[in-house]
Amino acid sequence: MTFAGLLILASGFLLMTLGSIPWLAPKIAAARHNLTFNALRYSNYRWFWLNGATQAMAQGMQFLILGWLVLDITSSSYQLGLAIFAFGLPNLLFAMLGGIIADRANRLKLLISTRLYVSVLIFALAILRITDLLEIWHVYAVVSLLGTVQALNGPARMAIVADLVKRDDMMNAVALHTMVNYIPWLITYHG
Image 1: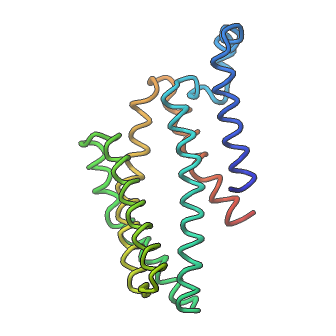
Image 2 (image 1 turned 90 degrees about the vertical axis):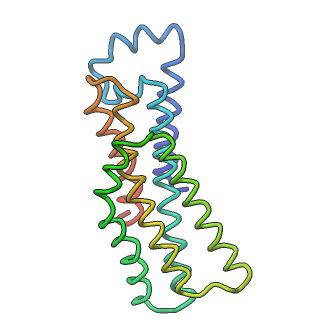
């Protein structure tokens, strides 16, 4: 886990703790109009936000390991580029469909099922690697499926924010959610 990830988690836990102290709660309520983290006053959103932070860090580690795996198998940066393309193409093609599904389906069940699918796919890849049966086409297939699952997960994550906060705090909640999703990527790739 990166230092930035630890800072994000620590700030989230600190805000959750401060919001639950009885004698401090009225002071926090009086200062709510000035808080940058206004949406974090909703308990379910706080848990969702922390989950988003850990998911973003885990996804960054997942891509690091998948890239390393491709380079270990093939020693080719071209093959690594193809693996990245294999993730991005279904993600791009199915993102609109993922948005439609996120608007019509139970978002929580959709999020849970996509995380389970990702776990199963990564576990299958690990089993293939441990048994020395892993070939590059397995990685391409799993990465393509991961891109498809991400096309469902991304819109559902953004859409569920509306279910967790009141309308007045929607803009703040979306901004915090976007921040927690992209800061680990910026630090990982540009830090």
